[in-house]
Length: 416
Image 1 (cartoon, helix red, strand yellow):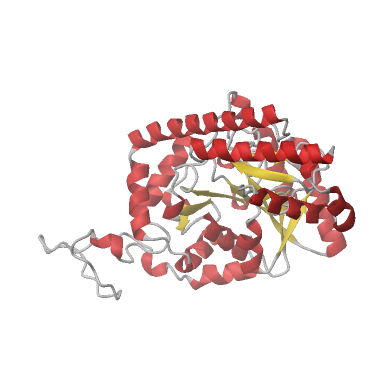
Image 2 (tube, helix red, strand yellow; image 1 turned 60 degrees about the vertical axis):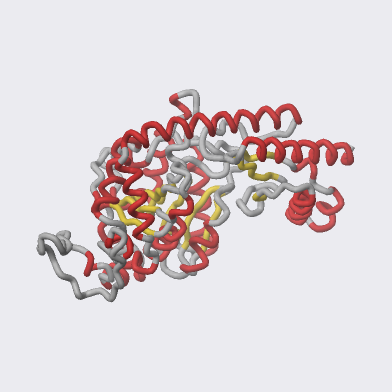
């Protein structure tokens, strides 16, 4: 089920010393508990000693993993109960991308993705693992419909027959970055059947799961965990979810992400590799306190969604008033996908190509005081699209939008 090098990590057992029943730490008052001379640690007596030690190991304490399992149960509605043993923490989802790539692919293998999609997957996945990212074009089809699976299959078969690339996994963003949409239950079931048909893994990056603010149930987030694969004839061992606190809890600096899986070999490989992606125990302690505070979570998340929706609406109004096209249906995340292709320099398009013209457009936007991720970075099918982030202070958002709309108006006039 996992790659040769993944098996090597799974067998290495690099985290085995931290597994097993939890040990009672020595208490100086009662003189009870285990006296550990096993780790070379210089403990500060002024703090909770566990926060500045190796504690329970590199994959998150049992208490943190239990708190995350409770969050998953409450908000992700898993079809199969999630236990702390199904969860491995690392210092961010970036590291978990690397862990999954190393565990599921061998050099030269491939992972299938959509177009457009989060651009940094290139660095997170292919650079450390020496494998290929295979991008799927949709040619105008709705990438969130069940019919889109046919496009994945076309790309999968083309890679296998024309280039000999063995695709080992499909990676999706749900909610999607940069389109801000969620996959329906029907589409996710179709994706699962596709993965079962070709025996490839499904990695669902659900880092924006609780930043969804659609007005209709049909817009809402459906976790892949909420779909029981057994009645569909799909192996649970093929399904893996990535989640973290960076987005939904406005805590990118904590550098905490987790892998949720029923695949024991993958989890064993991840446990070994977590040694090289160890999250700070101070971060783990903060995250545990946040997740265990049910009242805080139940208050914070609706407020966050309300603010995101308000900022999204502000950005939409500005774009619509300026006549700037953007991808419709965004109900999640922090961004809008806008079409500035009208501002591409026709001479550069003719002489050097549309992607060179997009790079030129990006430079001109920077000169006006606006920096955005471009379509090329997100492997878009056509040039001229950019990602606007609206999860910033209101005044900053207003100024940035005004600079974009003024630039668009000026550039459009010149094209005429």
